[in-house]
Image (cartoon, rainbow, N blue to C red; front, side):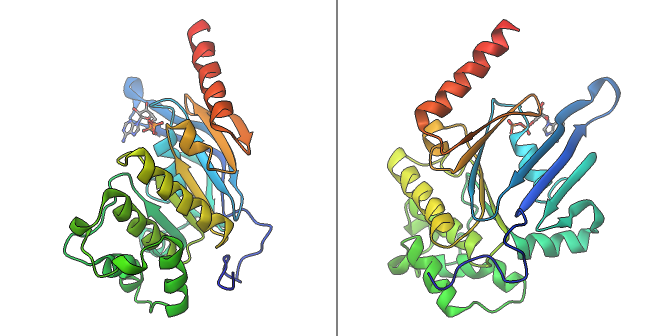
Amino acid sequence: MSHAFPSSSTALTKPAARASGLTKTYGKGAARVTALDAVTVEFTRGRFTAVMGPSGSGKSTLMHCMAGLDPVTSGSARIGGVELSALNDRQLTKLRREKVGFVFQGFNLLPTLSARENILLPLRLAGRRPEAAWLETVVTTVGLKDRLAHRPTQLSGGQQQRVAVARALVSRPEIVFADEPTGNLDSRSGAEVLGFLRDSVRELGQTVVMVTHDPVAAAYADQVVFLADGRLVDELHDPSADAVLERMLAFETHGRTT
Ligand code: ADP
């Protein structure tokens, strides 16, 4: 495809994002919780990574720290080679607008705007003009061409999430973070959305990191990283749903016997 990522300013070999010895604690004294404990992980450019782990293992915290939504306690979080802790609030906001796309479980669309207006909102907020050809590519990839004038309430859950995926892709971000993107969808719509996320990686060269509980969803990814108690404990490449499930069960068994 002619309109592929990444932007020419970044070297192909650099990871899209990297955590190095990333530690995050919440609270003080006896109430102190270590949500992430020296996590080192690379999100390779043009790959689809799923982050899995039991509830409370640090998945959301990792995503929030990597997206610059939550400051790290120690260690490093980088997006496209930029150290997030070196940025002030204004610079962080700018980086999030320009380099990061988000897809949330609850879609987070504005109800009074059409699908097209929702998709273009991040660009408008950044004062950037949409590139017509790229918009067309993104909208076609997520299969929304004939739904652009619809409001969110006139769309199914799956279609709303496809609008959210298009919104995340349209600014050509360095990386897209998706937090349980299929959590509110039936399995058919979920499969569609996962297919579009995978297409955005395979066909458009996007980098996607997705938090999920679901082994079937994780099997759409190129690699799966597993967190447990704030630590990175395993990695699986080219995963099948069965292989993911097997690893999950292994951790549970391990957790019970130790
Ligand atoms: P997951 O996404 O895997 O369910 P989280 O990243 O939400 O895990 O949480 C990891 C740990 O950090 C948990 O013990 C959680 O209770 C704690 N935690 C997360 N956010 C906060 C917060 N804002 N304040 C205090 N503790 C938090």
